[in-house]
Structures are given as C-alpha cells and as structure tokens.
Length: 136
Ligand code: NI
Image (tube, rainbow, N blue to C red; front, side, top):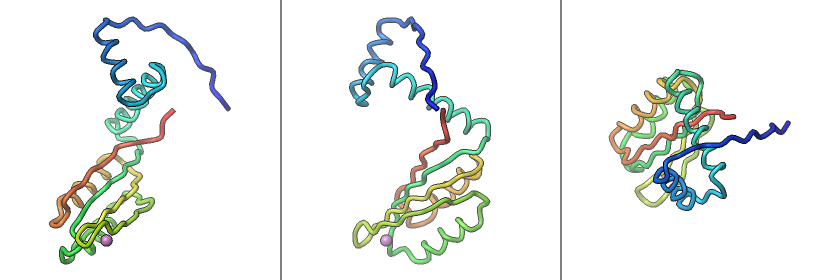
C-alpha cells in the first residue's frame, strides 16, 4: 500500500540551504525532498541503535589469508555470539587478501561486540561496520 505524501514548508538560513544543495549534487539526489527523507531515515536508524532495538549490521573485513588460525578464530567468534548471522560472503581478492562480508541481526551491543572482536584479531587489516535497520 502506497502511503500518501504530506507536504510541509521549511525555513532555513541561506547558508544552511546552500550546504544542503551542495550535498544534493555531491550525493546525486534528484531533489531536496529525497535528501531530507534519507536524513530522517538515518536519524531513525541511529535512534534504533541508541535505544537497543533489533538492528542490522554489515561487517566488511579484509584479512591476511596467510595468518595462521585466523579463519578458525573468526568462525569461533561467530559461533559464540548470540547475534544472528544471516549470511557471509568470502572473496579471494589476491594471493594475500581476503574480503569477507558478514550480515548480522541482533541487539546493537551484540553486533558491536562481535565486530570489535573480529576486527581486533591479528591478521585483520581492515574492519568496518555499517549500522542499519529496517526503516519507514
Ligand atoms: Ni580468501
């Protein structure tokens, strides 16, 4: 069911509006409305994370394929946490580097703990967590 769209008028200082418009161009938005909708959604997701609701996370890591025991340690961590791992994908980037993407669902603290535990392992060269959630 498609929701009705409401219109409202916003008053902004000129320089703030200029900043908004710069971002529209930079991020490829088609209109101010589109950017404002996304900003509100971002805020809602942030609130879900702050309030400890069920959220989603996407953890991307790059690690050294030759680091001994690393794969086993990563799997142990994933089994230990009571966070739901929805799926993970592994890509062999080159002779040394592996990219792994892990999609997680659970409480924010659990997702963050798991991300920190994996990110801190010896041989993990890069770890970044994208915090997301279902939105309106
Ligand atoms: Ni690999």
